[in-house]
Image 1 (tube, helix red, strand yellow):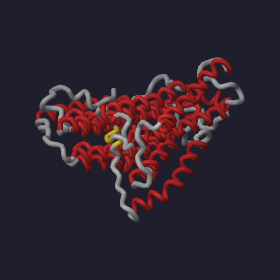
Image 2 (image 1 turned 180 degrees about the horizontal axis):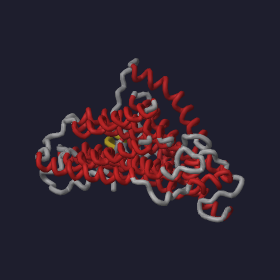
Image 3 (image 1 turned 90 degrees about the vertical axis):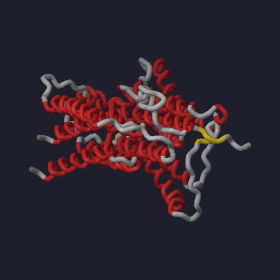
Image 4 (image 1 turned 60 degrees about the vertical axis):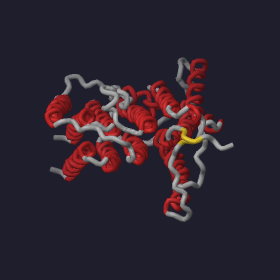
Length: 113
Length: 313
């Protein structure tokens, strides 16, 4: 197996881990963290899949690389926003949970799609 | 088996172990520390995929900045009341199986070779010389997909506006609630005096070299933001209130210059965000430097969080 395929499989596994953490972990902050894990797994799969097209004597294809850079930045912006929402929730209610008074309201803290 | 494939396998095992540990450990603090380490390891993986630009961004943003934000949040959430009930075992099992299926599907997609390999790389390389840039990734970011890059910077500012808007009305335009540890003659003070000069030079270098080699406005801006935060946390400079005109000017100067050059392209060149021939590199470097400043300020303020105190008159 060549190196890119190995990292591609690693990315696939990370997507699985991230998704699991996002669904099962009840704490908002841990959900945000799991979402970042999921996102970086997606970036890795994307980078590897598009790298198969590496041509023109380049190590990698520059177009998907530029897209991943943009994606990392946007994911950071969304994470910053999500963390600010969680901290505001703490300030308002003194709690950091979403489950008791607001069932099904977990969509809010993810902040990214 | 060559030495590099042994290295790769070891790296993947480390990434997966630490990645999984950020999900399963009970302590949020341990999870965040794991996430920072994970970000740095992932950066090495990107280097192995010969994507050095992505590696720099991942290490700076994915590991560093996100980690810092989360550490700050963990420190505050420590005193939160009430814990959520953990998901029951059958549900966790079912979710685990479904997630494994998703991962397996992706793995099959990675392993199955495509029939037609779509790529824009030859077109990028063909026309790169016209822009005067040597780094194809910078070429894509500032020439072919300049609109994406412009909008990405706008997203940063929108996110910052969103974070500021979460402050209660009475502290709007106040001072962000960044924790300051002002202890004279501590290691932190020493580092905050020693590192910024070096960091600023590194940031300018990264921004300048980004046209030719891996690097660029984003990586440079992150280093600037880190230096600024270090000085503020050590208490050597006070945290500015978000209503300061110079702060807001710095925030928008990068995107504004980018937009102005883009609009000028409609008159001087053929299209929006097109550069007049012969001036492409000079204009791109001007955009990159102003963006580095704006990105540095935006990232620093995002990390500092929403305003919490009213500005003292």
